[in-house]
Amino acid sequence: METVTSNRLSVLGHPQRLALFRLLMRRYPDRVPAGELAAALGLKASTLSAYLSALGQAGLITQDRLGTSLRYSIDLVEVRRTLDFLLLDCCRGRADLCAPVSELTQAGTDLMSDQKYNVLFICTGNSARSIFAESILNREAGDRFTAYSAGTKPYSELNPFALEVLEQNGYDISTLRSKNVSEFQGPDAPKFDFVFTVCNRAANEECPSWNGQPVSAHWGMPDPVKAEGTDAQKSLAFHQSYGALRNRILAFTALPIASLDRISLQKAVDEIAHADKGVPA
Image 1 (tube, rainbow, N blue to C red):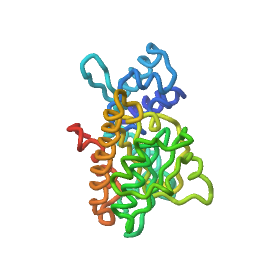
Image 2 (image 1 turned 180 degrees about the vertical axis):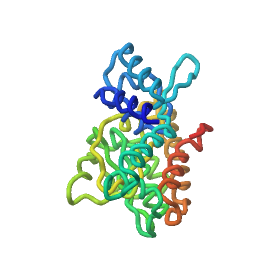
Image 3 (image 1 turned 60 degrees about the horizontal axis):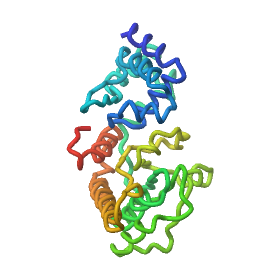
């Protein structure tokens, strides 16, 4: 294991290979097409192929094929083995020697406290999907959760089709607005217990780490704003996004959060993203 770990650390020592690894970690458990990875990182296909090959040979990622498309995902079992080796071998498993690492490890066994949780939903434009999620969670379980939403590149106005869907479902839209994610990264921002990205583009972007190490997951889904056709066809796309998000949020609110350890909770929120796709997490 020592030789394997040394090789993996060497592979991750390259800045762009590390950036690729970090992107796939943010997207876990998604299997991401090579073309999307190249576009997100601004890499040529040949360069990306070389980086993916190095990560694959090191045992850090897996590859599968869907039609003509190659897709890639983190091999989380092997990544955890590497981290375990570093903790147990280099630190001899002593918390006083490797405090930051051991705190993360111990967090996996701690139960979430029974409290009111702060949840942030992020997408790029913050005009539809994340607004849906914020509104749904606040109405369905506002006694246990306080939901917020933001965009990495928010639009100045909310999408009119999204507002129409919310109004038709009885929501008060008067307080909704598009917000930049930076509003939630200052010293006076709420401390989040959960952070979810609901679009691939936002998940692909580099964002600062969140204070307090919230449980995070990627709940990517198609962007209804990009729907084409008649107004009726566009409206249908927004209704479908609303319905899919509502199903996921109802599954989330049904989790026995206070009785789950962090690792079990992380697995549960990851699985919610794929429960309506028939794709194993």
